[in-house]
Length: 201
Image (cartoon, rainbow, N blue to C red; front, side, top):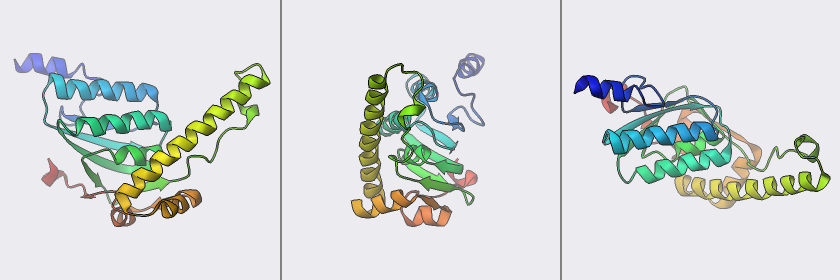
């Protein structure tokens, strides 16, 4: 039985770093990574029936719409299992938002969180080379603008709920771009405490 379980656990998309109920996310967040993460979560919860999952997140950020899917998945499974998110050194950009989806949010002394305006950096029309006509390029730029502002509102309200700040305050923080150290992350209620392996495991 134990051998069969071990063989089954080896088929998980993310090999368990230390224990089978742990997931490591240490790359840029994109659609492929989200699909793999969701598959692994579903296996851990529905197949192996774990009641507690550890997610180790150390990411430079990535695709915000993929990150929103991952954030939503973690919110959903919190109703079924205990989710403990552990930050590495990088909670940058989109990864900072994913981190807010965990049931218990733990950081390390070296953790840095970067928050910024999602509407900054929208590519100009000349940077959409795969479209042939100006009309197609303009349509793509318009879609990017709309989606980025929708995501910005989403992030505003997420931060407002976690920090207690007003929308004007969160807008100002994001507009100028903010890097928070571990002490500041705790001050703004964007984490619940420091990770202690001996205690939390």
